[in-house]
Every structure is written in structure tokens, then in C-alpha cells.
Amino acid sequence: MKTCRKLMEEGTPTSFATDGAGIASIISVIDDSAAPAQALTTSTQDAWQRVIWRDLAGLLLNADLTQITWNYNGSSVSGGVTVGGWSWNTATRWQLTAHGGSDLYGPGASYYFGRTTSTFSNTFFCGGNLVQTFYYNNDMWGHPNGTATRSQNSDTVNECLPVHIDIQSAYGKWPG
Image 1 (cartoon, rainbow, N blue to C red):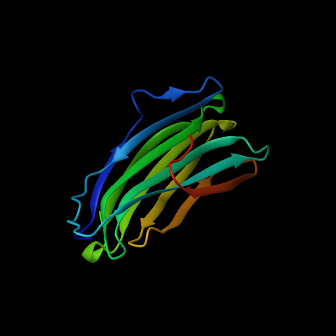
Image 2: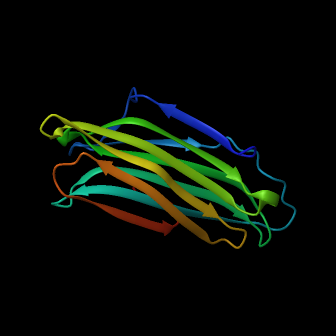
């Protein structure tokens, strides 16, 4: 944990964008890491993972996005940036109640790591009972060979209707 750097934000965002159809979203750049020096010719890669909780009809309830960009040269990484994005369905009264992220370099610049986290809440969804979705971690690793790996851990609690998870990921910039 000594090498971890963390930026955490909590609370209700003061402003956010809406698409007019009841989906609100915010994007935040998480870039608090010092880039290791790199002497070899480098290439740049982007990769993202979006974790979405949906209702029985397949409508988005809320989502957490992690996108990373990193430089690689076959033996090390540098120049990493993590972008976090959060979306929620305002038409059904979901709210983003906490969000944040972190990033770091592995030992010897062996990988670049980006993580986002968030919590969403809703008291309308189940007739006054508090329903929450927790994105404990939405993780992406960028490797020296230009490949990426991913992991996520999320849960929704106290839901009265069936909900399910949808995970999307790809190389490149997130198209949303």
C-alpha cells in the first residue's frame, strides 16, 4: 500500500450532464501519478471497461466506467492516465452518492493500473426502501506489450425487482 496513490471524491456532484432521456453522467480524469522515465520508442494504447446494472427490461439503472491510456515499449509502461465516468437513470430517481478513483504504476513500471469506484442510491425504485449499488472496484491494467486486463467487483442491495449486470470492454476510447 506504500506505493498506492489515491484520489477519492464523495458526496453529490454539484453539476452533471443529462441526455434528455433521463440518463445523467459525469466524467473525471484521475491522473495523480508520476510517470516513470522511458528511453525506448513508445506506443500508446487505450482500453476501457464499463460495468452496468440494468433492470428486468434491460434499462440502465447506473454504470461505472474506467478508461486507461498508457505508453508502452515492450518492457515498461509510462504516461498513464485514468478517466472515470458514471451514469445513472434520473427518470427512475437514481442518484450518484459517491465516486472516485485511483491509479499507480507497478514495480519497475511493469504495468499501469487504473481504478474507479462509486455508490448509487434510490428510494423510489422499491417503494421507499433504500436500494444501493456499490461499484467496489472497476479495474484496468495496461501492460508493457500493449495489452490490457480487467476486473470488477460490484453489487446491488435491497432490490425488490430482478436486476442484472452487463459488462462491456474494448480497446480504444470509450465511444460514449
